[in-house]
Amino acid sequence: MSGSNLAFLLRPKWIAFHLLVLGSVALMIWLAFWQLDRLDERRAFNDLVAEQIEIAPVPLEDLLVEAGDDPTSIEWRQVLVTGTYLPDQVLWFNRSQDGLAGDNVLSAVVTDADGVVVVNRGFVPLGFDTPPVPSGTIEMLARVRLPQERQRGGLTDASTDGEPITEVRRIDLDQLSTQLPGEVAPVYLDLIDAIPAIAPGDPTPLPEPTLDEGPHLSYAAQWSIFAVCVLIGWALAVRRSIRSRRRDALTDAADEPAPPDSGRPDVDEPASSTPGTDAPSLR
Image 1: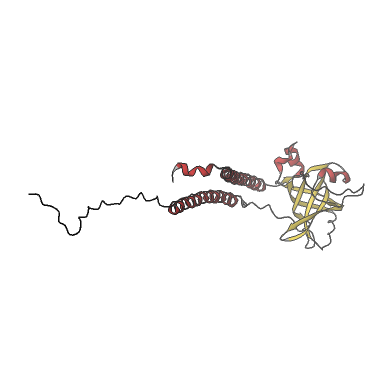
Image 2: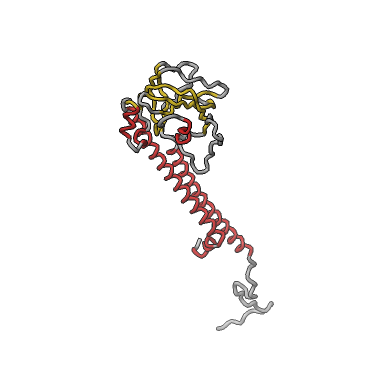
């Protein structure tokens, strides 16, 4: 098909179609690279957590001194804490573990170093009563975690009007410290093990963080495949339109009427002689 017959590709509706295809492909390619960036972040996170967990546990007060004003540097480290639980507990609701819905139980421990630290004792399924805190001195092995902040668009906790907080959507230490005595540590702890031992009726400690790479690589591959499919669809649409126009052009040419007859014979006929007479001979 000649270039002049491809002029339909520059019509407004086709230009809009081209732009839609290009925009879709560009978006899908961006999403593929975004998923690859997420994969890199996940791998960096996994490496950090694995490295922090492998470090031998140390007393919490020593680790806080080491961290100084940057508690983010000690997240996921394992610490040793000795102290006594305060009786009041707070439920971190709308949690799940092992396929069950429930709550995490938050308790505060007054440490032997005269500090207070919030401890996530673990998970309790819905429908089960919250077990009371152990009495007496307890020695625990725990994992350091950073407090959480409400993200834009996130729900806020209901106002208690001065009453003690009993349920929270997130572990906000600034919020919880208003009802705790003494100086509260800038981190909270996920309980791993304790002496006296964790009883069967106590909250189930949280498992170690999952260190898989997630679905990011497969998502990146999917977005790349989608982009290729869009390009193939565009090429097929253009090819089909070209074939349709070529077929219509051939049909129109076949339907055109033949040119009018000029009245002249296709072959000149010889002049006929008069019947009954012979042509004269020349001698």
